[in-house]
Picture (cartoon, rainbow, N blue to C red):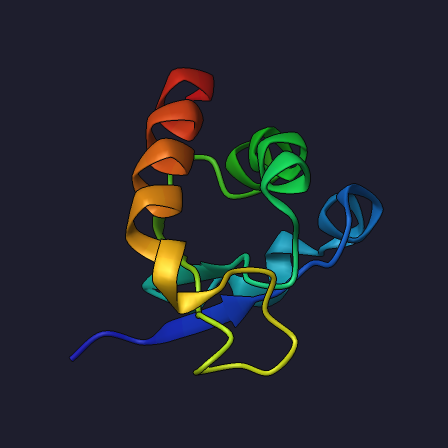
Length: 92
């Protein structure tokens, strides 16, 4: 069994303020990015990767149907996700 803990920064500043030591007991860190715009995700990604370097990360985007405050409509979710993951993988 794995312990997965979510982080949901809503800005670059919030990502930089995360205290990684609070997540030491977690096996996997879930980065929920659904509250960020596409551009903000690309800005925040390097901070998340630096903050949790060497840790296993799961990147999650929820659609508006799943989360009322999400920035991602269900209709374009998969297309948007693939583009974002491609961009994020270049940052890593």
